[in-house]
Length: 206
Image 1 (cartoon, rainbow, N blue to C red):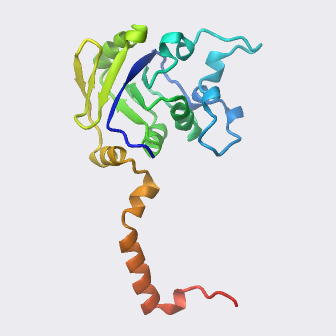
Image 2 (tube, helix red, strand yellow):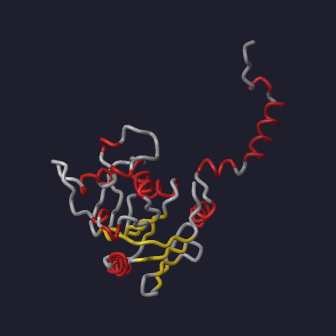
C-alpha cells in the first residue's frame, strides 16, 4: 500500500447527500477481484446515460479529470459493504475524501486501501466545497502529519484522526502489513509451540 503523508491536488466538489456504494461503483462492475481497471466504472451511472451518452459529471470536466480529492455531502459511502468502492476511487486517482460523515464500513475500507477519509463539521465542509468549485484553481493540500488541510487561499482547517490509523497510512501499512511487522515474534511463538506440543504439527505424508 502506498504511503500517505502529504497530498496536493485538485479537489472535486460532489455536494450530494447519501452517495451510496452502488453509485460509486455499480453492481455490474463487481465481477472482478482485481483492484485495477475499475476507474471506468467509477460513478458510471452518473457519467453515462442509459443510451451511452456522456453526461456532465464533475470528474469528467477538464478541470477535475486529474482530481485527487473529493469534497462530498454527508453519509458518503452508505449502502452495501462492497470494497470495490474504495478500489474504484483509488484506481481513478482519488486518495482523499472529505465529508461531514461516512458510512462505517466504507470509512474502514478506505483506511485498508490507502485512502484518507476526513470527517469535518458542516461549516468547514462548506468552505472546502466553495474552494472546490473553483475548477482548476481548486488546489488543496492535505497534510496528514500535521492533520490539516490548506485551501487555495492559504486558509487552514484542522482535522482529527485515530492515531493508529494515521500511523498505518503514514507507513503504508494495511492489516497484513501491520501483522507482518510482528513476523519474528509470530515465528518464535510457532517454533516454541511446535517444540512443546509436537502433536499439533501436521504430518506430511511421504
